Image (cartoon, rainbow, N blue to C red; front, side):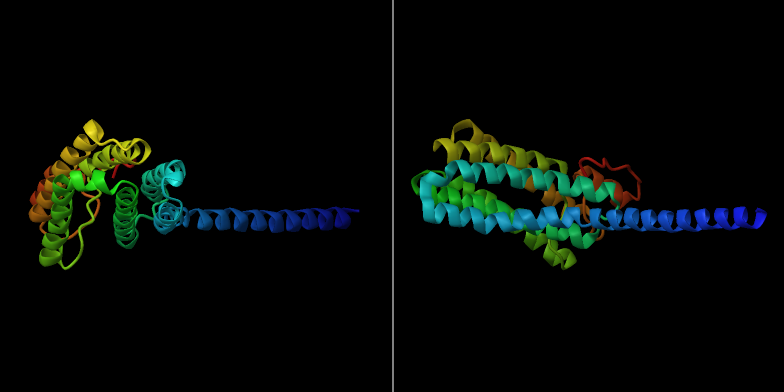
Length: 232
C-alpha cells in the first residue's frame, strides 16, 4: 500500500513536471514571437509605400480615402514599433536605422502620391517643399561625412513634425487644400531639421535615439540622462 502510494505520487509529480515544462516552453515561445512585433510593424509600413503609390497611380482621386486610412495606419505603426521595441528590450542600432529609412520611404511615397493627385498644388508650393528636401539632404550628408552613417536621431521635434505632416497630408490629399496645415508642417519641418543637424554636429560619436540637440550636448559633456520609453 505504501509503495503504491509513493509510486502514485511520483507519477503525479512526473506528469506535473512535464506539464510545467510544456507551459514554460509555450511562455518562452510567446516571448520569442513578441520580439518580432517591432520589425513586423516596420515592414508593414515599408510595404504600405508601394501599395499607396499603386492605388493613386491606378485609381487616382477615387483612392483618396483609402490612402488617408493607410497613411494613419503607417503613422500608428511608426508610433508603436519603437515603444514596443523598448518595452521588450529589443531596440537595437540595426532596428532603429531600418526604422528611420522606412520612415523616409513611407513619407516620400505619401508626398509623391500627393503630387500625382494634385500636381498644381505641389508646384505652387514647390519652394517650401524643396527647402525641406534640401535640409533632409544636409542631415544625411553631414552625418555620413562625419560618422560614415546616416542620421538616426528619432528626436522629439521630428516626432512633432510627423504629427504636423499627417495633418497636412490629410488636408492636401483629402481636401486639395494647403493653407495653415501645410504652413505648420513646413515650419516644424525646418525647425526639426535644424535640430537634427545640430545633434549631428554636437555628438562626439554616432549613436541613435537622441531626444534633442541639448541631449547631444549632454552626451558630449558625459552627463547621463534618462530617456522616456514612450518617446525615445
